Length: 312
Image (cartoon, rainbow, N blue to C red; front, top):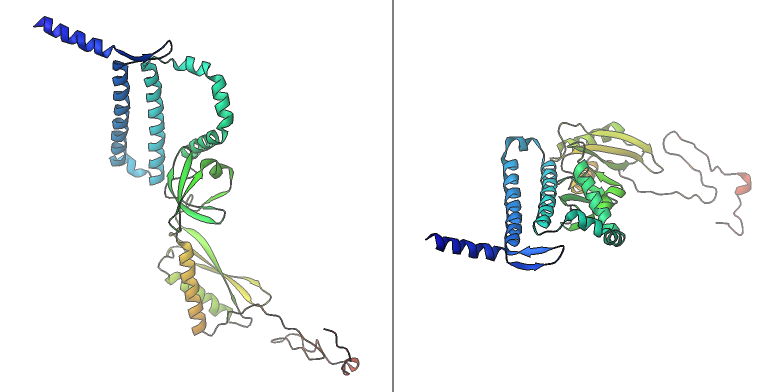
């Protein structure tokens, strides 16, 4: 019986030692192949278990979704980096010797893939500093979107049109990006509206403030602010500032507020003027509205006669 077991063990040992492929710097046997497969399978299962434990643990509830995602992503990259190094050592590859021998190759790759390495380094910066996290509402130039995923090389952003945009991380670190949710849960937005000269400014301010307060998406804690911003050429310019938590659809909220402003102004007989200019020709008398200047175009004795060739 012992001889049978020894022969079986010897056969298994011989099979495991069978060299599939190898040279002076690299050897791949059945045993090392199985070890590498088990190593990656164990790393994958271990990462999955670590993620589940972290998400279910009470300590994980103290972190927001963006911070959870960042911790998980960094842990994933660290685990797989260690696993790859161990796997290379398992099949006989000397990592230090490989790095020393491939210096020239890495220089060429660095020159050819400098944009990719720039994106990778930017991804590490974003994940470490957490300037952007999953769920943040960001504005790039005139485009507003919600961060869906932050990777090492690219970041996925979903626009208001429900379109996914793949943004290289270097653009997020080298260009101006407005993070609307980075510091506060609510953000202030402004709507400009013009009314005709002579309107009751106190009444206008009350209507604008009431409309903002009654909107369901307006933050009830932060009180809206109405400012008489300027005296325009053709109108009084008001600015309505309101706060909201729904940053992703703020343009829809602004549109609904503008519709309500137009409706209330029609009811209250408040005029939203359009730009216009009055051109006076000839000796007509100019009368300014209210207590303004009268007689800026008084008829003069030299202007009573109509010229034979009028100039326009």
